[in-house]
Image 1 (cartoon, helix red, strand yellow):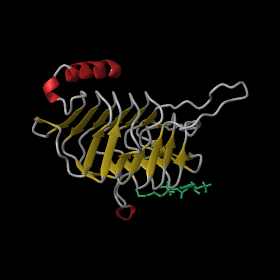
Image 2 (cartoon, rainbow, N blue to C red):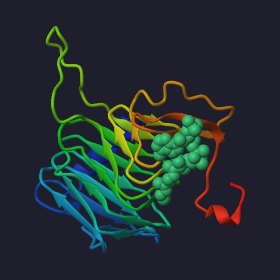
Image 3 (spheres, rainbow, N blue to C red):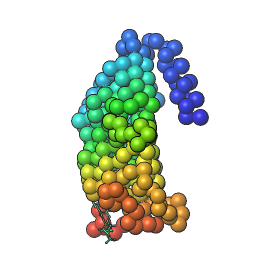
Image 4 (cartoon, rainbow, N blue to C red):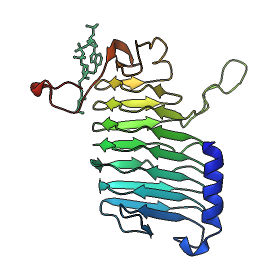
Amino acid sequence: MGGFIKQISRFLHVNCKKFYVDDKGNLFVLFKSNGERVYNPKIKGLKVEFHGHNSIVEIHEPCQFKNCELKMKSNCTIKIEETKYLINNLKTENIMQDNTTVEIGKNFLCCGLTMILADEPNLTVKIGKDCMFARNCVIFPSDSHSIFNENGTLINLGESVVIGNHVWLGLNVSVLKGSIIPDNCVVGYNSVYTKASIKYYKVADTNLGAVFAGAPAKVVKTNINWSKANPCYRVEW
Ligand SMILES: CC(C)(COP(=O)(O)OP(=O)(O)OC[C@H]1O[C@@H](n2cnc3c(N)ncnc32)[C@H](O)[C@@H]1OP(=O)(O)O)[C@@H](O)C(=O)NCCC(=O)NCCS
């Protein structure tokens, strides 16, 4: 379904030439809170660079950016939903490879996230709504270089990363290829979350998550939830 919508949206964009930002079919659009669309907007704190063709960057108001830089090759999509929080230091390291996608849900609070999508095409980073990321977080859905087994078979192809709703990444957290982080989870300071981290994840119901910590990150607490409030104030979530 998502793929179908993407195709339709590409068809519409590619067939509405007047909205192109450049002569290569790239599109940068701001969806204003009043329903208007601004093509090729100037957004304080956000720099967008197209290095190929037919890429789409879609930003929704309200939004506030500081020191953010998004660079992409061809047929890439970046969609950032509205947020009441500051998005700080959101970067693509080098230039996103062809056909890569970044989707960020509503109310993202970001102190620093580098997404390394420069090495392999066709990968996606999906971040759900209400997520909070501390400084120096990295999402790395490929390894940049190859590993082969004894038969010469490649064993480390990149895999997309999916982060659920209301996930808190602490300082210096890295999230590697194939990772899925469930809703309402916390990943502790300096942790390295891998696709194996979820192996023993189990909670009593969908309003609850787990604390993952360590390198590789493992479940250290289950049946938790978290809030942005300072713990001194002892509010309920
Ligand atoms: C993840 C975190 C919030 C969990 O706090 P907590 O629920 O009070 O967890 P605890 O301190 O009780 O630790 C539970 C276990 O996980 C381990 N652990 C906790 N954080 C860890 C970490 N970052 N790396 C490795 N192990 C960790 C503890 O050693 C303990 O292990 P044990 O059960 O073997 O004794 C906290 O450890 C943390 O990382 N804080 C930093 C948050 C941050 O980066 N904030 C920045 C602002 S957004």
